[in-house]
Image 1 (tube, one colour):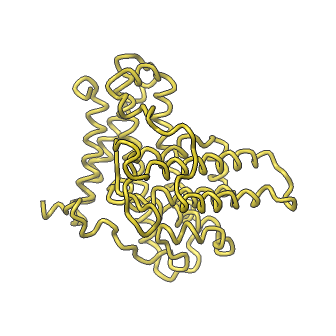
Image 2 (cartoon, rainbow, N blue to C red):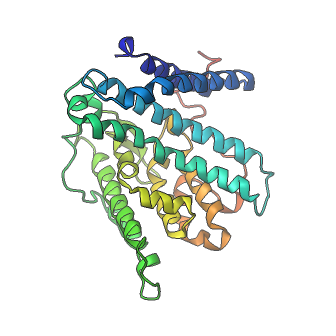
Amino acid sequence: MANSHDFLVNCVLSVASLHLARLHEGKEEKSRMNALAAARMNKALTSYRSELLHVTQSNAGALFASATLTAVYLFRTAAVDIEELRASIPPGTFEPPQDIVDKILSCALRPIWALRGPLTVLMSGWDWVMSGKMHPVALRKWWPKGRIPATPNALEEDARLQQLEPLWSSPDRVWEPHHVHLSQALQFLRETFALVSQLTLPEMYPPVTAVPYSVDDSTVGTLTDRGAIFVWLARISREYIQLIEAKDHDALVILAYYSVLPGRVRNVWWLEGLGADMVTAVAMALGREQWHLIEWPASVVGVDLHNLFSARKDTLEGQPEELGMEVI
């Protein structure tokens, strides 16, 4: 497909450059590869956007592949940019500048918008994508139909999620139209948590894009399909996303709880730090007086709410699954 579509070639080269930047340890090499990744992605998007206006049988698969690689690019660059912003804040800072808070929250929203690209292609060319070369990536007929928590730990977490609804639906709160979008986002999140729990059951489902996954925060098992953690991002409404952008406290709390899912993934370079970064962004936007609402997700993803700007250990450091560029 890349042989026939230049925009896909550039998407591949962009993500490859990002990966090289991740592997390099020298600051100069990292900067050079990150700059190359950005240049290639900009070049890809120029022709991708025009092609997207006319989705056809011949370009649908390549557009879907490009949209997926663009999502990977946005996931990774969000983490890189958040780390740079965190590094600009002196350790021990009690209240960071508002412009830094806004920038970090904007970065945390980037992965949400990232999955709108593949959705756009699927809505325009569903049959072509599903019947073409990309159907193994896009089709998930083997996923369990019912979304039921599959383990005792999953049942406990579903109960935690249920306890969020009274934040906006309690008798002492006046009902507002946006509460519908909060309740819908929470229901989608419960279903996604349940699906992930089902796909971590050993020897139940065939591995497709399997990844190491911390199933109960102490045992690293296997998630047979990493695509499951993106279901919530793909299903939430535009109205709910706008609530996050407006720093609605309830919407931010739901986002913090979602961060547990990517935060439990292990040894996937382009998801590295995403869960912790999302919780950090939410914590900064909420303010200290609301931190009690996100204590659980913060503890799961390893964020010390009272030391948000201290260094975080690289969870990939020393892992045999990924060697540094100098070693290679």
